[in-house]
Length: 353
Image 1 (cartoon, rainbow, N blue to C red):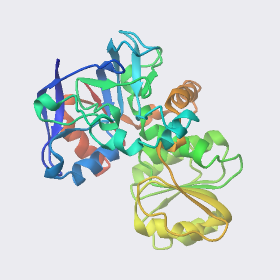
Image 2 (tube, rainbow, N blue to C red; image 1 turned 180 degrees about the horizontal axis):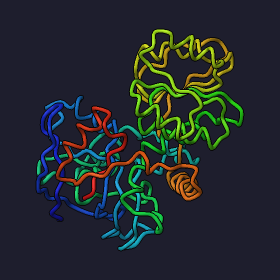
Image 3 (tube, rainbow, N blue to C red; image 1 turned 90 degrees about the horizontal axis):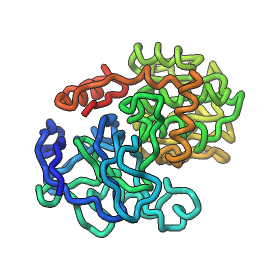
């Protein structure tokens, strides 16, 4: 058993309480990680708002980075002292996992949103709290993970900076590179310029897309989008938004990160006859015209062990300056960090443990 500190959700929409908990493990197939940092993702905030008392108290967080402390005897490739980034969990046993597509894992929902191991057990049961969110629950001093959701961290970058690569940035950039396979010269629209949308903007520039149209309601984010690669920016509240986008040109690809129904309904009219659209916020796909592709995307169709090093390579080369999105907060002020993300004051909050 291990004594840890964790931010516990006990009230819908409410503050998280940092508490002392007892955690079992690691089991033979698990790794105990001492967390150095964790990003805050909108999925965490969605779970806070959607939590029900019937769910029981839980520990959220799924963009962790830390140092390996203990390794189960069945785990290879990691040893105590290794710096790691944590990403989403997969079973490693189903057909998609066997084919190298862990983002399509048959047990993806259970492993990432079930707040338990696949056998139904919960390492925080002694404290009456559930963990294992995305196979990590990284709003804590320590987390349990497996070799399937661990990625060796880069030694030449601050470990805390690498935390948000495990979900939000991977999703935005991966959608451009993998899900939509954007080619040079294709016209791309991106609805929403939070961390996911701005990662998509940077990736679109790397891919050679043109034009790159970013849409948001916050002027400061639109200004940053221009600096990071957007060629045009538009206010999502503009009643003439569709016409203004059409004036730039019909889109080959569109990334919808907002979940806004009004924006979602515009997608089909903005795309080329054989255009592709990716929906990332869990909203309805709507209906496209014949020949158009509407995709519901998870994690940018990315394999973390391959794609996180690729993103770091782009960062080193100056092509993917994701550090410009990040603001660091002490773990003890997690609720302030969440409030700043909600308001749009902060694009990507990263907690330092």
